[in-house]
Length: 120
Image (cartoon, rainbow, N blue to C red; front, side, top):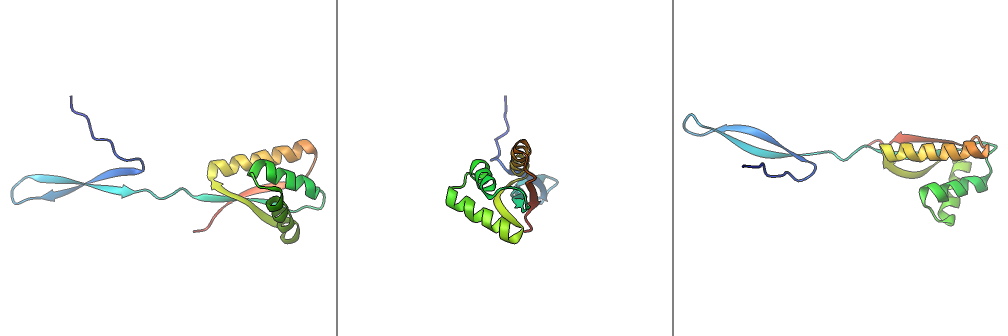
């Protein structure tokens, strides 16, 4: 029983026809390269009601940042109106946004978090 050789992940072969001197058609495998997935940045938006300490705690818990880094991100959010908490694939970014929004809602804070595609 013949089996097809396995292709490395991320590469699908394309067959390109070539003709030799006779009537025979030769097929050549040309591997195609796949593009890396679109990345998304998770942003928190500033508001006048959410305590800074809560924002720091959320950044530490959901984005795995140490206290100093989380405080720097919180200050960026406070001063610039928004700040990047991390860069992820689409599904992971959506999950992070949901986690932050759920934690803010449960704590009674109007904190907003969004995911935006990174322009390449």
